[in-house]
Length: 295
Ligand SMILES: Cc1cc2nc3c(=O)[nH]c(=O)nc-3n(C[C@H](O)[C@H](O)[C@H](O)COP(=O)(O)OP(=O)(O)OC[C@H]3O[C@@H](n4cnc5c(N)ncnc54)[C@H](O)[C@@H]3O)c2cc1C
Image (cartoon, rainbow, N blue to C red; front, side, top):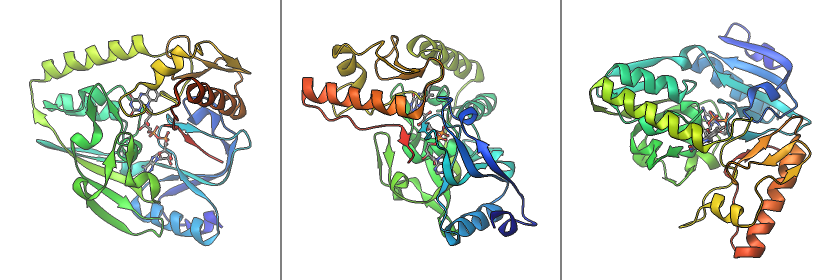
C-alpha cells in the first residue's frame, strides 16, 4: 500500500531492507519498507500513507545517532534523496536540503569563502538530523547559524520555521518531540578567506580523529549533565573497556560504545543500563541518552 500511494511520484520503495549497514554502529534488523523520497511531494504522500496505514515512520539521516533493534523496524524508514541533496550558496547564506551531509556542506561553504561550519564539519550527520538535535561541537551549535528550517509535518504539510520560533537547547530542540521532518535549512555564515577556513577544518578533523575510537560507534551515548562531563563520570566509574557481547565501552572515550564485532542492540542497551546505574550509584547523577533508541 506504500507503493501504490507513491506510484508516479519521485520515490523508490523497497521491502525488508537491513538497516545495520545504514547506521554507524552497524547494528539493526530490517525495515519493513525502505523509501528514498526525492522531493517534497513524494515525502508528503509517504507521510500521509504511513499515517493512514497506522505504520510507524522514521526519518533516517546518516544513522549516526540511532540504535535500531535487532528485530528491525516494523514500519517505514525513509531517507531524503534527490532534491534534498542540493546546496545553494546565497552569500553570506547557504541553503541546503535535509539530506546533505555536514561535511559536504562545510566543504561547499569553504569553497565559497563562508565561515561558520568549521567546528561542526566532522560530525557525521545529515543537515536534517543536525537541525533536529541542535548538533554541536567545540563550542559551536547548529542553531548558532540557523536562520530557518523547512519542515514537513507528519500530516504532510509544509512550512518554514524561523530558528527563533523553534525552542532549542543543548542537544535538544522541540523537533525532537514532534513529528516534523527537516527537509532543508537556511544558514547564515560569515565571509573569510577559503585558505583560513580550510586550515581550521583540518585542525578540527585532526582533533576529532584523536578523540574518538575507530570502531563503529554512535558518538556520545549520554548527554553531558549540566556542568559535568558524562565521559569523565563514566571513566571515574572504571567502565572503560567493559564489554557485553560485541559491545564495548571504548577504552579511548568512556561515553562511547563501540561495536567490536557482532554487537546486538541488546548488548548496547545492557551496557547503557550498567553505565547509568554506575553513575547514579557513585555520583547520584541521572544520565540521559543522547542516542535515539528505537523500539
Ligand atoms: C563518530 C561520531 C561522532 C559524533 N560527534 C558528534 C558531535 O561532535 N556532536 C554532536 O552533536 N553529535 C555527534 N554525533 C552524533 C550524531 O552525528 C548527531 O546526533 C547527528 O546530528 C545525527 O544526525 P543523522 O543524520 O545521523 O541522524 P540519524 O542518526 O539518522 O537519526 C537520528 C534521529 O534524527 C531523526 N532525523 C534524521 N533526519 C531527520 C530529518 N531530516 N528530519 C527530522 N528528523 C530526522 C531520526 O528519525 C532519528 O530520530 C557523533 C556521531 C558519531 C558516530
